[in-house]
Length: 469
Ligand code: FAD
Ligand code: NA7
Image (cartoon, rainbow, N blue to C red; front, side, top):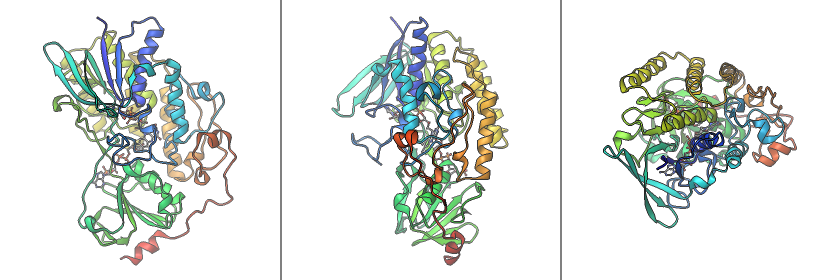
């Protein structure tokens, strides 16, 4: 009997797993019996945009946290597949920071070419999984979200690739229940157009706070206040944007901050991150971790320590994305088929610990990028995934972070060079601050939307906040 492999989720990680098996098949390996379960009607995971918030059209929790006007927040050259380049997909150079629809097109193009859609059961949610120690089999219960029909499947190996940026982490604040304006989590944010002229409070100091804040600036918000728990992001913000320590309480429309200042707000967006949540897994098989570069209990960040038939892809916080998922998927594939012999439990534990120790010592963002580079290299060295210059990618990450420090509204206008093809990206026809059409069509074919000025908002946030003191 051939190996039976279940894959839960057809986002970029699940798609990478399918591609990994297909790549081996193309080289003559046996294809296992594969079933990939995807609760949405299409692949792409986060990149499969939907206007739904809360509950989707099938009564499931809406998965994607992405929004209109989402442009890649890192250079595309850092996530490029080494077995399917941007040049191969688009046939010409494109700029370094494409919008969501363009990246969706890129990731979908690769798997369409591999003809792996046939392995995916769409509109099918995984409800529960049991593992039988005696038979070493997983029993998986799935349900068609349209018809309600449930099915049972048995697998030898199981891959969890359901992502971890979908279940919002929602802290509470005194007085927020009676805040009269809109309160939402970043997961439910779909576009900043309606915040034009509004005074926005964002809680959190990471990617979502930064990007949604600058989206709101782009769409003409009157002011943006970013409230941090650990420390400010410290970018050279536009004059309408300020950083404040954590909110201590709300009083009507007023938010009070830990430094004794206060401000009046029309809306609050919690950019407070996400929870690892695997409601279909018993607790002894489920990752439980904050959002970190190396969650514990996963050998090589992929293999469940107590059950080496269980694999996770994409469970890490991410500098690298698509190509890291590939590195993981190739490793998981070879571990599943026995091409990679897993070491003893003690040796695996020691390896996990060495990564956890290295993670604990990371001093800054540059060191984090190097850490994930070393991690991806470790995986790629173990498989036949086409090698690429990872040190050059790490340098790209550092250039990108420097560009952000220099110009938070302009870093997406920079061009980077592919480490795989050597192709220099185009300078995009429209500066990010002026780009009000994020479609594939406009991105590829223009015309430019550049305007002479990028001064979209002119109100001084400090003055607005001072009034609330
Ligand atoms: P996901 O993309 O989350 O896909 C998981 C899939 O599993 C989904 O299709 C979901 O429907 C399915 N699923 C979940 N539960 C079940 C179930 N029980 N049964 C069946 N199917 C299930 N990365 C970048 O490289 N560049 C960016 O600019 C960028 N921006 C981002 C912006 C936001 C707002 C967010 C949230 C993330 C961003 N990311 C970005 C990171 C992004 O998470 C990864 O690029 C990538 O989507 C992760 O892929 P994944 O397959 O691991 O998870
Ligand atoms: P992140 O990167 O996990 O960041 C979460 C932020 O939320 C971070 O600044 C946290 O502060 C903050 N946070 C968490 N809990 C609280 C509470 N209780 N109070 C205040 N602040 C809090 O999530 P993002 O959504 O920004 O990014 C996730 C992905 O989406 C990423 O891949 C992007 O590309 C898009 P801390 O610094 O821990 O003190």
